[in-house]
Length: 216
Image (cartoon, rainbow, N blue to C red; front, top):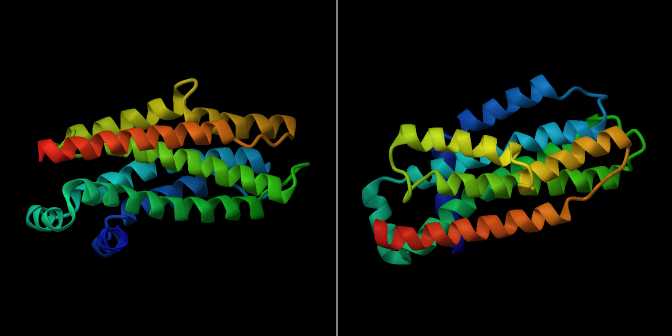
């Protein structure tokens, strides 16, 4: 699995397809995050943007490999393992971006009664929830379920909006806890949303890996 993760990560980095979601996310942060703002509100805004970015990265990893190369790698390592490695590689890259973002936003924001360790922990957990949820959305809007680019992208956008706005979803609860904490100067660590996001991602990746074994 380690070799597969390195393979898919190298493909993602060398393809430079990651530039579009990364630059868009940077613009999103520049527009919405200002130094000196309340830390929890800034973190809530920053981690919310990770969800569609992660979904986009997952879709790139699942569609970037040429058909011939995909067939060869699948024959050597198995379709399920190859598919899972692509999802995990994209999720790991997005998680790295989320970690750096959460720490940077915490460093430049006004703590306003929130300890730096508590605020940083809340930001990291919130980023993890949004990354995991975004990975689930990206997995469901990519192969083997959807192959057409237009339909896949439309599903990704709609799924990201629903994941962020639907009451009770892991990402919505994590972002809401950060924003609400900004108003009350209380830090809430989103452990329950994190557990829900982990379960959601595990279920979608398992379903996707099983589907790719008989649909491709």
